[in-house]
Picture 1 (cartoon, rainbow, N blue to C red):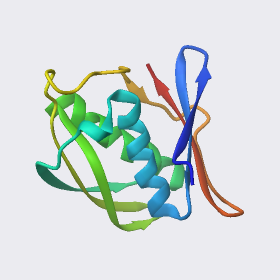
Picture 2 (tube, one colour; picture 1 turned 135 degrees about the vertical axis):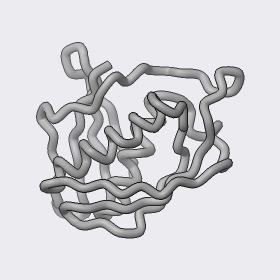
Picture 3 (cartoon, one colour; picture 1 turned 120 degrees about the vertical axis):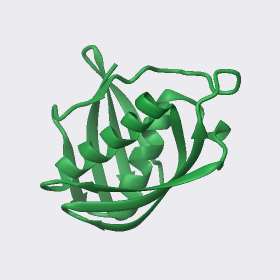
Length: 138
């Protein structure tokens, strides 16, 4: 199954994310974010963090999840490469992420993502799995 595909949206960048279930959808969303930023294949498993996110519904949870991951990169220069979601429901997510600190000698920045937006956010179950549409401010 394809993890995600990107689409152009005015001055922004959109992604359509796929998953067989909620865990895979949110895992693939984290992957998509950092695949757009850099090459996730170059991110080593050097440290692990456990994060918990809350939301009002699936859409709010998705935005909060991606904002938390982007915040870790922007504030701590932490590049997550793997996402293990161990608990998820419509208003809560807990995950262990692993990765390493950004190193300009090893990590090429492909795209600067400034923010995750609520514009046209969608998270829904459909036949065969789950899908989400997210717009990033670039």
